[in-house]
Length: 415
Image 1 (cartoon, one colour):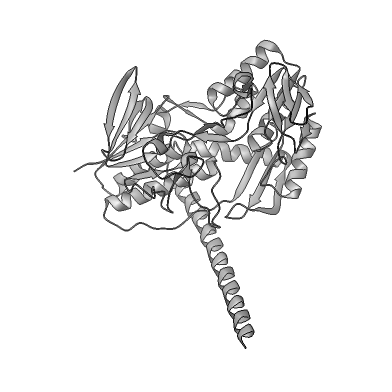
Image 2 (cartoon, one colour):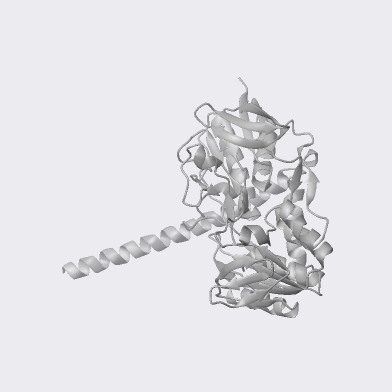
């Protein structure tokens, strides 16, 4: 009997999972059918949305390209509900609700802009967390010719957006406002480069401040000071759809579904969760960041595990890790921060034009790998697993050494 696999969401993680399932099922002669549901008929390179916001027409591709020759059925519609007990999903397609059934579900609906409780943020600020939001920023810049832009949020999205607009539109004065420090997750050397480039581009960085209110003329800070702006861009965090929580899946406080090392829901064995909506652990026990670098291997992991279980085999329980963190600083500069498998910054960084080219290679390869042969993806996946295994061994050795030391100290005290 055909095993029905339903994948919700065609971002990096969902598309990676769907393609690998379809490809490997043919290779292994497994009787499965893959249906992919997405709200749009296009794939959006979210890692390019700061470029879109600055006015570049990039990063959107018809899903027919990566799905060509895969036998994956595409349903373009909006997911409205998941019923894991009945193994059904409600999808609104052209105004009508369709019910899709499954044997195995892959939930990959991703994330959107962070929900803000700051007064005026939803009314007066724009976001580049979605294609529509990024295009709205670009349209405002074209139509209104703003003299000042305030970017709220000093994470990587905020840094990339501030740098991209400052470089592309030198007539706009850009303020980057952040509650903490700019470029978290980077080494001191890496952060210093980010700050130098932002300064060269004319971006005013304001760290360790809180925004109290957003209005039509800018933002008011908690200390009462004002930052005047003709346009405010909000890049403070991401939020996920409530569908997992509403379906009864066990979720973390942020709404992301808790999964085991195989990307399987800890509460529903027929459901796998990948990408931004998954609350997974890195090799050091920390929570994995929302990123393309996480979504792709999550999708590959789920695909392998699902097919192993369809075939009646016990799947591998090998984790994957990180290699680097890539930050664009306009079109001609960037930062490649090399990291440990558990995402801690190393001392090694790449800067300048070579970093910009490196990131472009990574970004182009991420989409290119979703269109061609799975060979490159399989090689990358093997590498990420190897670095994770080495990190896991180091953690185990460290824990054993600590335990032995504590046992020795207790024994000495007893004597």
